[in-house]
Length: 147
Image (cartoon, rainbow, N blue to C red; front, side, top):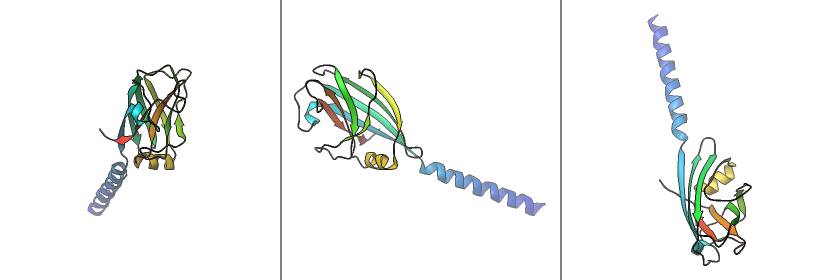
């Protein structure tokens, strides 16, 4: 009986440690970006500004975002997360904002591909907002890990 109880306890301990190890590997990473016209490539002149707050669950690759912006030259016509690109470089859209009307605030969730998650974690994603006056983008900000 003592041997059975001991093996049961050992099995419970091993299972608990294995679960804790898997749970420890998953993390929620926070990202931030400050949106402004000077960060566009090439830089723009605008009073537009904004912020991006986002998280990535590294286990599920679920990406959640909250975006606020104001002061644009006109209504937003499009908005996207772009990558892979370092600050000062341009890249194609990775995650377009699909909404009937692109207005602040914007909230959403998407599941990223492993490659998209890797680029995001390496700081190679940016967000920008487009307007009629600035069809290539009026305000932009590079996503960086933060609190």
